[in-house]
Length: 376
Image: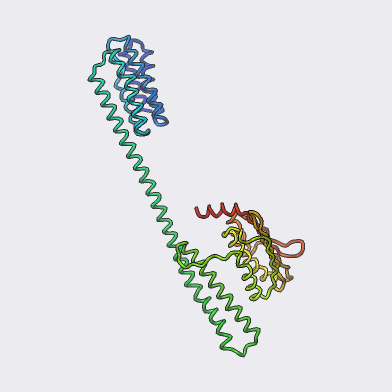
């Protein structure tokens, strides 16, 4: 604004000596300088307004004695607007705007005030140099923007690599800490039946269940390790889905002694893989909770799969003396977090029949959007 005020005051002062009326000097000064107010918002509009102001000065030369009212301050303003236009707009736009303005302003001055040909050539050369400088500035700015983008991508890549390294470290520590102890449990449980053949048959069965549970835990842990290490890990196991329901229920009934009534309505193959895996894990946790809080009672599992949605309901009778909290355990918290990750809904708590129920429902489309956000 300081520069604009200085240019306007200087231009008006010079125009006062060039035109016979003070009002005309102020009008011409305003048209030739004040459009710079818009130079950052729209350089093209600024240049067009200035072209009109300089053309008005050319026409005013008809009533003067060979004096064209283009003050030095106004010319500086025009050069500023032209370099701003060249650095903001593509070269084809500037190549059309600048020559058109010169034709409308400079060439008529040869007739109105007798502007010599060499002056016209000097103005054309100066305008060409300004346009070239603006084009160079535009290229430099584009290169700088590209460099900033490249730096951002590089930082993002470094961030991803740091996350991958941390995931690998966590996976390695998890494997080192847990795998050894779980392996020892599995080996000792299996060896106990051979080293102590005098044990009752029921105890042998218990040790077999311990061995199977430890082996399953090892398998699940390796899957978690594979996930932590990332999708590039070779030889990783696939996540369990609803296709393994029968095996899950059979293993559970054999290891816990708890009866499970499983009913499936619909085709599990139509459930998206992510939601199918989530429902499998939720059923695992729900069965664990049912055994913890309702040992000795049966568990009713119902899965209903429809067009675009799926529902899992797990209910068991609440045994007196066992806690039946609706939200104090980590298992129910984990279920809610897993359901929320895929845009589903969950309700837990006692029903009117004295059962504790975990009721989960997924919208397949909402689950797909949640999975896409997770990938992003």
